[in-house]
Amino acid sequence: MKYGYHEHKDDVLARLRRVEGQVRGLQRMVERDEYCIDILTQVAAASKALQSVAVRLLDEHLRHCVTAAAAPDQEGSQAKVEEATRAIERLLRS
Amino acid sequence: MKYGYHEHKDDVLARLRRVEGQVRGLQRMVERDEYCIDILTQVAAASKALQSVAVRLLDEHLRHCVTAAAAPDQEGSQAKVEEATRAIERLLRS
Amino acid sequence: MKYGYHEHKDDVLARLRRVEGQVRGLQRMVERDEYCIDILTQVAAASKALQSVAVRLLDEHLRHCVTAAAAPDQEGSQAKVEEATRAIERLLRS
Amino acid sequence: MKYGYHEHKDDVLARLRRVEGQVRGLQRMVERDEYCIDILTQVAAASKALQSVAVRLLDEHLRHCVTAAAAPDQEGSQAKVEEATRAIERLLRS
Image (tube, rainbow over all chains, first blue to last red; front, side, top):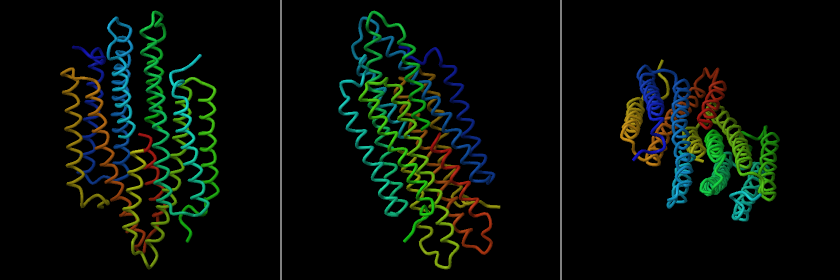
């Protein structure tokens, strides 16, 4: 089965690769004993990039929910919203 | 027109009143020169309570989107998802 | 005893009163059945305002820690940093 | 010069390597078309791990500030607190 983000898989993967690069960059900064505040600034940037991947995935997921709800068999679409809300809650706490 | 949270208006209002009480409690703590870290702990609690109001409203809103999408006239439901995603994004940045 | 935020008490109180006003505004929006996304935008604004009170208090607290550490009796200043870090952690999770 | 996190460099590096592993795991999940909500749960976990690196770095940094302030030459320690507060603010917004 294909999920909502399928069409944008390349974009999501590209973003995740960039986050991976940022996290490797952070390791180099620590290895080179760079200044703590500069490292923290980069942690905030990586964290922001990761959250934007989440927002992208959520957007696709919600579109998919809505499209699925419009189909004859909409069983489970309320459960899907419930699930999405829990995911948003976890992100807000992370 | 009635929006998604209409049925749970009383619950949402009760939560908001509780947050208002927490914020007033914070003012009293500051007036009485209470310890900074204790005040910060209460700020975190009020902030958490406010986020949980947001999650509640989002949940109702998304259910409403999905229900609306299942109706014959689903025009604008993708725009509604877009709008919801932006709202989630603002919450994650707040 | 006077804590770090003492000199800026009026500013902190003014900010908290503004947050209280925002939370009361939210209650009015819900009572008038305003649009969910508009309410969420205001929740994000109130949440941001609350976080900025926290940042203000933390700033004063940390200055106080540093000043106290420079004094002859610096006992407990490491414990104070520990405490501040836990407070920051709670804010990041809220 | 050695910064505050120097003694705990290995711990910070180990945490960052773990986050890198989590981000690579996310890429595999997307490549295998895994379920969006499961991916979001992992994004929240990676984001939490990254924030805990930040908290660790901040803790070391603040200890360092306090220790430096206790030294005869405490010039710039208030500026350091200012800088730390800005870093905390960026993390809260990320």
